[in-house]
Length: 317
Image (cartoon, rainbow, N blue to C red; front, side):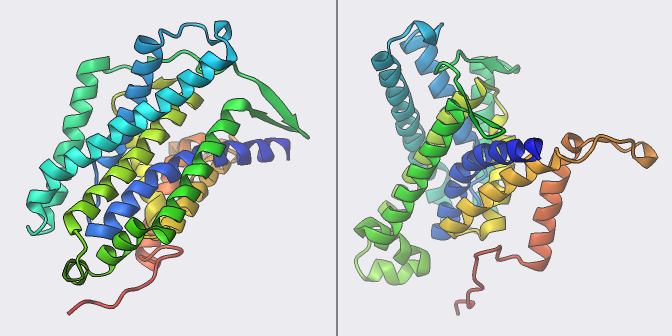
């Protein structure tokens, strides 16, 4: 039971990061019905920006030698830098790679998105090389015991940052003027334009917000794992996309829920006992994590393509 509860905590932590990245997928799809395959690589760029800030701007080598105030300044500035740079990168990608193809057949922007994804990965590979790069600890690691469950201060920071960003985004979309404009464009782009909504600006803001949240996800990922690699966006982006589809792509609450569910599933699959299987199949739960997640994706697409919280929309004619 102790191991089970520990895996639940680990699942919630990684699931929170999946949720942050899944929000970008679901926001862009909800507005322009495009799967932004480059979004995972924007998250990866967030990890690189955070790594650059702590190693080249703050010259961090041993966080235990920093004062509490200095450490807080480093964390806040690093997180903001990752958010801002990734947000600007998202707007730049929308302007260059997607906006000229907005009225093209759907296959064209999808191919453009894949091209942007590969370009970002090659840029990152040229900067940091093909191997994983370690980062120094951003905070002194402290363990807390809640009953029989061990939780670290980095786990708490990840959960708090993710919760604040998800609640803030939900408030932005449901209770602000720009949120109403985003919902109007998502519902009917042409009608929104006739009512005076600047559709291009709303779409750009959507990319800005989604990419900024992915940048925050990159920061908390580096904080939690202390390493990054040029293709981490592809791997984690697949899980985040699965989370968006599971929750109902286009639905913000669904993306949040889907990320947590995928994180919990991946963690709990490791609970499967390590025993020999027939036909030379890999044994142990860790070996089946990815297979289980993508099997769930296939089942969702086959039996409930709208996801857990998605709704079937009437076809526009």
